[in-house]
Length: 91
Image 1 (cartoon, rainbow, N blue to C red):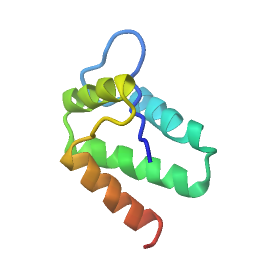
Image 2 (spheres, rainbow, N blue to C red):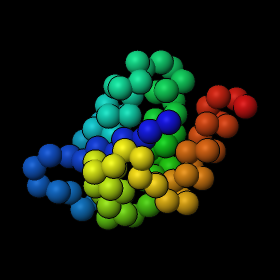
Image 3 (cartoon, helix red, strand yellow):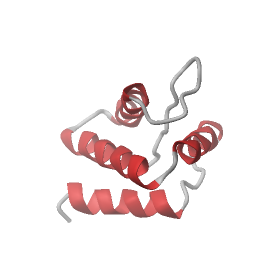
Image 4 (cartoon, helix red, strand yellow):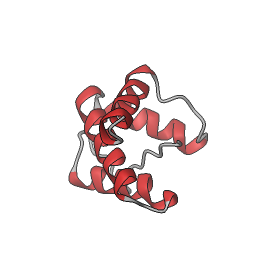
């Protein structure tokens, strides 16, 4: 599953904002024909990113994904995404 990290336009914030969350969720769910499961996975993944990554690291990964949708998200986000899949899909 390709995860799309989306930045806020205009001036770059230094911390997570409501707009950061809204942009992330819009980019995460839109190309996947949103369902409840996809929405829950995206919510969980964003919460994990906010908890585990500095905002600077988040924006670094976001830039990497903009240039290559197959780019690695790094160990912390891969682990968080896997945990979210297990949690939200009740696997």
